[in-house]
Length: 226
Image (cartoon, rainbow, N blue to C red):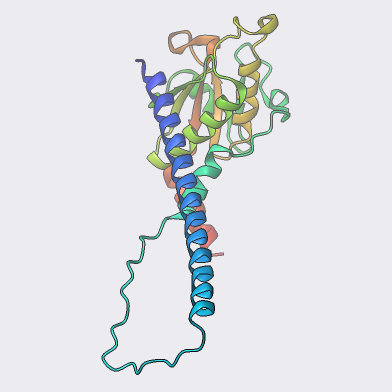
């Protein structure tokens, strides 16, 4: 299994685990609600059957012991789930932002053209990759969003996104390739990207430069002090 396939498999496993944990928590909440309702109904039936009673004195009374279930990190599950369904518009016109040279490229506003030139020359080592070739559009969008999120957490700067050349698509049009352009241009952590060199996949892949962990930390710290 190639590194790209393994990366995608890991992403699918994580997504499945998050969905299963969320479903288990919802089911547990439903069962607890049913049990509580049943307990109330049984208590009412008991009181109706017994009628009026005189309470006993509470001398040497032993309080019942309940096992408190471990809390479930619902916010964590929600955050991870949000990463999987993160809104990336298919209609965003990223192509208008790309340089109209022979090797299409993109830089976020404020990033100098030298960054793309260095990216094309392989100045940054490719640290990880994601292979989207052959995936449906929704699966590709979800996998890309999660891959970039995890890459940011790991402090990775340079990655390769393999989208294929579209030879197997309808009318031989690179639909997924164009979608990847649009999605990447909407991601705040993407500083620049360009078509990969021939040795790195050529027209079937992009090399992407991500915002450094230090810059992200500084931005968040500055925001915290505003």
